[in-house]
Length: 246
Image 1: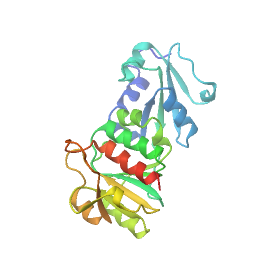
Image 2: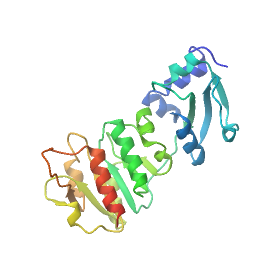
Image 3: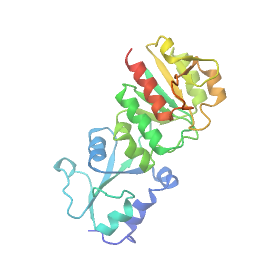
Image 4: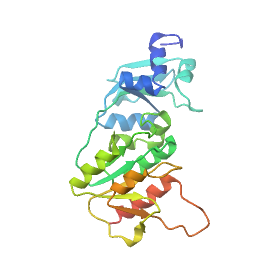
């Protein structure tokens, strides 16, 4: 059992809280029984399990290298207020462009909760791909991972240059909708194509103007009350579920 936060193994795990170290090691950490189960059922590689003394580990997971840690070590490894006492180190999966029927493109979304919720909703709405543009919060941020509730393991999610991705998608016959107010049509007035990508933009600035110009068309969501705008994850959910109806 590991009892000291100064243990080299523990110090290395703690480094994974930082994006720079996650990139160097090509690893990240997940926390909790649900995320552990979703990762176990996926084709992502679980490197090792870390469990707190007294926590029962599923028999299905016993073939993974496992480390028992004292309460103080678990507290040092997690930022949640009530940790479940189970963590895993997972190898980053290298995903790249592939043919898609329904894709969500994310342009510079900064809030981890927003990104995680958008990935989770994309999964629920039947989208198959999420593409993260430059300037978007790190997929492997612990708050993003928790907010996805395991959906990151179900979808094809990767980082890419959105300018290049829009060109590729359109060449493949996929219509690209950008959210915005200028020269935009209300989404419910449009016929939804079979193959579609939707661009959602930064919480404050929206979608980059050059990306909007590249899009097949711009769409907007009607506001019936006095609110100036919708939260980006809510707006994404409305559009993705509208598409899911078709």
